[in-house]
Structure formats: structure tokens, C-alpha cells
Image 1 (cartoon, protein in one colour):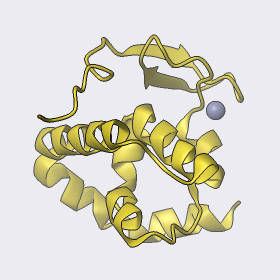
Image 2: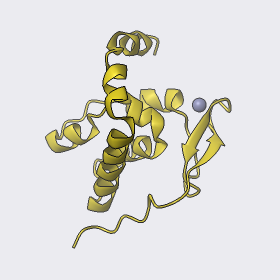
Image 3: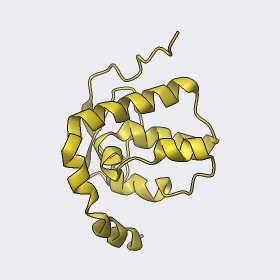
Length: 123
Ligand SMILES: [Zn+2]
């Protein structure tokens, strides 16, 4: 019996970031406080100690940009130190879908590691 993953079965909307009020973020209706990726990034840049979770969160940065729910789950983990099985299943499902969606395109984008490192230094 697999976990029931209805959380993600909702239409994604675009809302304005609650912090900078400039960028639009794809999110579900249920997400109350919305942060765009640049606003959320410093908060997500935390070393994950747990090996399993570290592996789970080790996905292309592009995925976090594309899906704010991934950011929300990671930030939840950072805040509370754990995720439920259901949340992990949702995370994996979204990542799987994004991998399919973005396919080879993602690999090309991953080459821009230098850009990412440069913007890291700005924080
Ligand atoms: Zn923002």
C-alpha cells in the first residue's frame, strides 16, 4: 500500500512572492506564504547531515526554481528535522515528473555551475 499522494494533485497557480513582491511563483492554492526562489534560497542553503535526506534533496537547482513545493518541503525539513513518508513520496514524485519534463534540457543547464557559484557569493 503506497502513500496516497493527493497533495500534489492540484492546479498550480501563479502568485506574487510574499517577500519581494516582484517575482511570480508557481504554487498550489494551499500554499499560504509564498516565497520566490531567490528569496528562499539563503534559507535552503543548509548542509543536510542525514545521508538519505541529503541524497533526496540533491537535485538540480533548476527543480527547486521550477517547483516551489520542493522548496517548501526542503525548508520544512530544515526547520523540523524530518519529513513524513508521505511528504518524501510527494517530493520524489515531483522530482520524477520534472526529470521527465525537462529531460536533456536539465543536463545542459547543469553545466552553468559557475553562474550558480557566482550568485552564491552574493549572499
Ligand atoms: Zn521574492
